[in-house]
Image 1 (cartoon, rainbow, N blue to C red):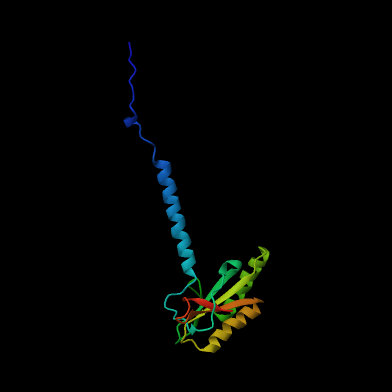
Image 2 (tube, rainbow, N blue to C red):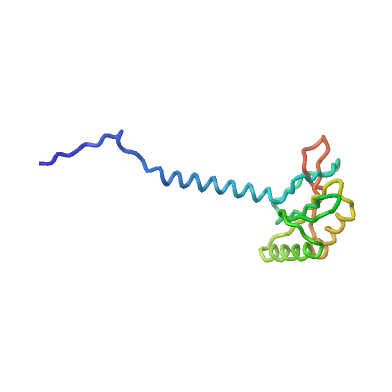
Length: 153
């Protein structure tokens, strides 16, 4: 005759595999999203200081960030990719069309090293005009009276 073996509650162990899967998926999600937000900013860009800048809300727009780096040989960078003036204009046109297709407004954010000659900044503005982008900001560091990294309207 068989006897039933009683299982005590101390012997029951939950299956942790689904919980570990969820934790790793969340970890991967946060690492990837943090990297995408960092892609817009080029390392080593020393922004000019402004006393009149105000904090802006970036969330109302679809943003394209153009960085102008290397004062000795100014280079237009978007997400760590260098562009010529013609390539930048075409890229901005594609971005504007994609934003229009999704009923969004496209905003051009310009980040130029403070040592970059103004004519290079004007060239990026011209690319934005040629791409028919109507909203753009220049990002600056705000003087000591305000927080850092605001944009001038």
